[in-house]
Amino acid sequence: MEKVDLGIDVDGLSDDDYHELWMKMGRIQIRLVEKMGQCSHEVGETYVYDDPYHKPEGVCYALLHVLDLYTWKTALGFPSWDADRKSHMIHCPAKKGTVWEMRKVE
Image 1 (tube, helix red, strand yellow):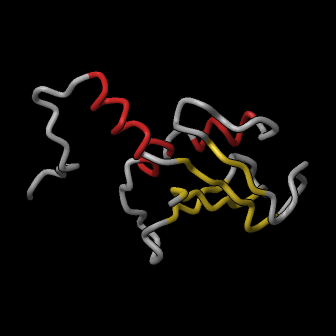
Image 2 (cartoon, rainbow, N blue to C red):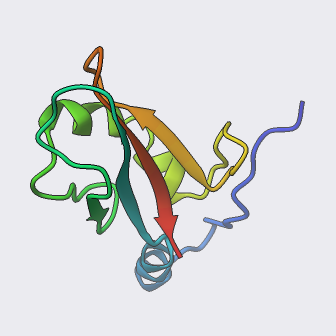
């Protein structure tokens, strides 16, 4: 099996080049698409990460913990296992919680 290549040549990458690459990475949007149990969030609520290091305010800490597993995959454009391939559908850790769509903001 061939390894994944992000197509980034890091040899000779200057600080300016690095910053430019970072800015191209884009933001990440999460949106509540399904609610099965008790939750302070409501369907349709949307939040945005400026980048994988800067989490949106107002989001449940337990959910953010689960989303952390997918922020870099999403920011770098790694495809989802879902049919859409451009968005990851993530369930919060509660037994009857919520489902969130996570996607890169183009």
